[in-house]
Every structure is written in structure tokens, then in C-alpha cells.
Image (cartoon, rainbow, N blue to C red; front, side, top):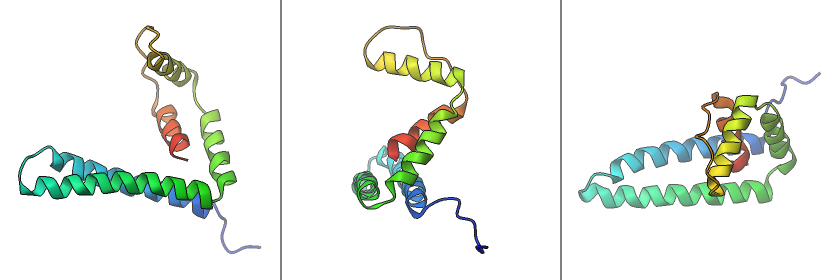
Length: 121
């Protein structure tokens, strides 16, 4: 019997931490970039570097990581979306295609968080 139960693969952990660190770095640098001054240029460079690292990191995880586990996790998350969230997502997609529909319903958080996990994975 193994000593540990593996809940997440290395690729899934990499996606999680890459997204978490990039999010906070982009958040903090984005808040500071809005203010003018000498620190503005440094924070703008950090902001762009964080965005670049996020993109490069996702590409590296897709190319070199365990794609099967990341896709499997994404599918499982998307399968658990509630009806209200499905309607919200459909309304957003219709809005992106420039079809005018009623405003999106506000569903619970799982659909939006599942979608962000899936899109980054």
C-alpha cells in the first residue's frame, strides 16, 4: 500500500501555481501601473513579464506536461456545471458572436472558475 495518495499530478500542480502566481503578480503590478511616477515603468515591465511568463508557462505545460491528466480534470470540472451556469455561459458566447440576447444570468461561481481552469489548461 502506498504511503501517499496522489490527488494532483505534477502538471496539474504546475498549472495551479503558475496561474496563482501570475494572477497575483498581474494584479499587484496592474494596480501600481495605474499611478504615474518613476515606479510606473518598473511595474509596467513586471506586468508585461508576468503576462509573458504565464503564456510561455502554459505552452510549456501543454507541450511537456501530462496532458491527459490536465484534460481529464478540465472535462470533469466542465461536466459539473449547473444549469444556471450553462445559461450564463451560452449568453456570454452569444454576446461574443454579436448576437443580441438578454443579459447573462448570474450563476454560481463554479462555471466561471471551471472555465478559467479549462481555458488555461
